[in-house]
Image (cartoon, rainbow, N blue to C red; front, side, top):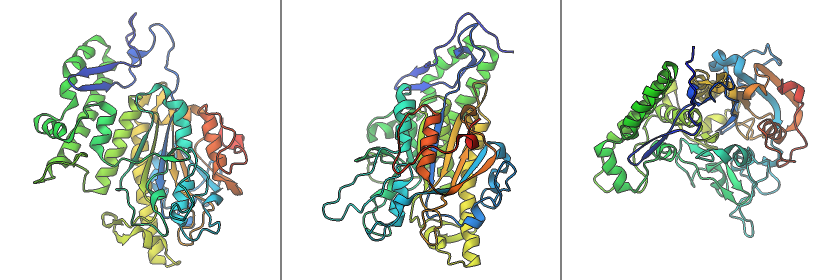
Amino acid sequence: MTFITSKSLPRRTFLRGVGATMALPLLDAMFPAFGADVAPGIPRLGFVYVGNGIVHRTFKPPSVGPRFELSPVLAPLSSLRDQLTVISGLDHKQAENFGDGTGDHPRASAAWLTGVHAWDRTRPGVEVKLATSADQLAADVLGKSTPVRSLELAVDTATQSACDAGDCFYVNTVSWRSETTPNLTENHPRIVFERLFGDGGSSAERLARIRKTTSILDSVREEATRLAASVGAGDRSKLGEYLDSVREIEQRIQGAEANDHHSVALPDRPTGIPASFDEHTKLMFDLQLLAFQTDTTRVFSMILAREVSNRSYPQIGVPDQHHPVSHHRDDPGLIEKKTKIDAYHVSLLGYLAQKMQNTPDGDGTLLDQSLLMYGGGMGDGNLHRHSDLPCVLLGKLGGKIKSGQHVACPAGTPMTNWLLTMLDKVGVEVAAIGDSTGPLDASSLAI
């Protein structure tokens, strides 16, 4: 039983210390005293991009409806089946070749959240121009009341040398603030951490702080102790678990930085990206979980695997590079390797989703109130086709998504029709996105 007093904490309560400000997770004491039983659900959206397409027979469920069979690639999500929705039959025709040569990979990521055709900006007289992406349309509404409007993340370093044709600019982000303004991605955990929780500063200041303490928690310890003494037992437990998770992430970042030895001055961006892809990805997802948990931001995008990515995966028995493997030419051995890569990526998505499912929020869990969209702008990676795209959803968006099913859309349905539908469910009113022709059939996706 939660002890209710005549006082309540403001939703925007912070712990403040020297050079640090920390948001808090949702506590019972933040509900109005003697008021509503639960806080209203806050929608959160996450967009996770994977490049190089899929193998449909190992990715796509063989049956539709609520009793669909999990495919080999989606098998890592078996414990989250009731939160899982698969949408098939969605196309991105604007990623096709419109007479501007090759470049299927850059056009795929450019079109994913915009539905707009990306022309090679190196051609004379052609400027960089897409459209405001769906994540940013959502951030225009959901980000009005959060300290950080949105996060744009990646687990790769931006490249200008790994692209199938022309300019690689479009593979480095899937988020566009406007038709001419892309949002650059961040892959450094400490920079993301400090953006969420403070303690920025110059490289010299960061280095001094790393050597001295590097802990935001140390800065706010006294105020956290006072707060814990003023709330009920349930809130003390929540607060303790939250602070422990922040401490654990700090220690992981510090551990990565401690392993870097440089004889020259630190650059403006600090060192400390974990060498392990697995550890790096999970650390970035853990940071995003804290951002959602504290309501610091409600929208994020993340490039998990960039188009034309040549990353290898020896940790799962695939020492081959991802992009060449995606051109499997129906070779059974390469298809098996591509399936392992795709299933591994899905398992990392499951890591975040399971943690969200284990995090209470309002009258349910954080995943109940949220929606994670996972997929890419290329369907068949072997043939560079932009039809029947991978589209996996996790979460119920406060009951607005009828999860636990495979929805098969009519062939040729624009991917932007789903984006339009999703935005409507979080209160974003737009007439059209890219080449959309209207929202999806509401009866298949909404309660």
